[in-house]
Amino acid sequence: MRRWIVLVLSALFFGSVSLIRLFFSDAGQGTIGFEVAKSLLQLGVVAVIGAVVSVLVFEYQRERQALDKIADLDRQAVEKKADLDRQALEKKRDLDRKSLEYREMLLLSILSRAMDAYGRAKKARRLLRGRAISTRDQAKVVLADQYDLCFDMLNNAQLDLENLARDVKTSAKAFSDPDALVTHLRSMDAYLNELIGEYEGSRSRFSGDEPSLPLRELQHLVDFLQKAKESKFMPEMVIPYHEVQKAIRGDLLHPNLLEST
Image (cartoon, rainbow, N blue to C red; front, side, top):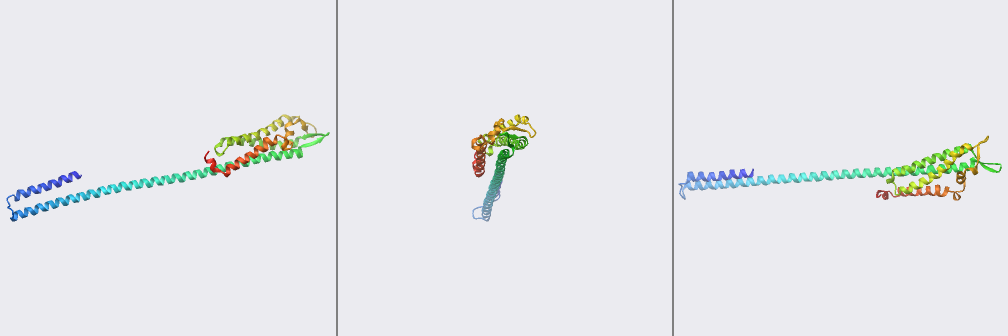
């Protein structure tokens, strides 16, 4: 575009000069014709210069507008990117918050279920001591009805511990040391499972008007009913349970440690 404008102005200038020379070539210096030709030439030069300046100003303004438009587009792009980055950051924060809330709910659920299973095992232990054991002919026997009742509680506790170990393994990322938790829960599960296995194998041998069986024939139950320090109940139930409590409560108090795992 600029090239065509320059060519047109050049053509007009040289055309004007040619016309002046054609019509005023015989005008002598100092004559009116000469002065008219001189004035026309000056006017032509001024017109051309004015036109050139106008073109240059126009081109400058056009280029300036183009630069301003590019700068505005760049600014809009930067603002759009900043807005997208801000939205992405807010979304990430929201997801992190929800993830933290979900993890906290999961940890509280695991802890609550572990406490409930352990509590039912201890309750069954106390009920067995107080209700299921009787003395006949100077020998201790286990009464079937209370034995059944208490082992319903132990069976439910064992199933919960088995499921808890599976849930911890499935949601391992939520825990700082999931393998240790699974080990402790499986220890508790295995201890109760031995008792239940003995119950399943011995329950059919109960007999009498009030069905019973000598306590000495139920070795796992004997161990279960002893004082904790004298039985496997301490190392296989009590200590693992306290370790589960300690680990989960530690994770609840220090959620930032879980983020780095």
